[in-house]
Length: 233
Image (cartoon, rainbow, N blue to C red; front, top):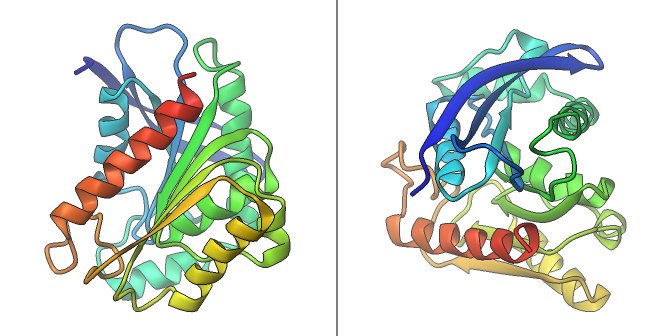
């Protein structure tokens, strides 16, 4: 397991300074990139831990704070989290992710690296949408995020792994099945995995009410396989 370095950085966005959490192997040198997009709670310790897990796998992991426009707030209760998420316009979130990509391209270690994206809950929605809008993304692993329109999926630019819990109370099963069918019809490379008995947020090991260890382990391994195949080659 690689020794890692982690730090916070700030860089310009269209609406002001963006804060991000970085984790990467200490040895330096060129690295493939994984963008880790937060749940509706914000850039909390769980998301930072996931970034470190990717760093231990040899990636340059960056978790941008999509609540930078709202003062870098972090929620601990659902009402506050909902207010923060509803205060983030989707186009602004995409804009800040594109600013993050511009910053990545300006760094010596990552200026020509392949970039993957993953995200959870709200972040899963962005991890599903961004590769439909940007050709910079080489692989995407959205976890239980919103499914874009068929027209957006038609523009999907990279292989994906989409993880979904059978008992998800937020994302509709019919939309997940639509994604699976669109991938098949459009000849897009990707996998949709529905985990039996799992709820929304099943990957989050800080939430014992929804965490499903076996499903989370399987989804993590599938994500690593996707990224290894498409980012490290």
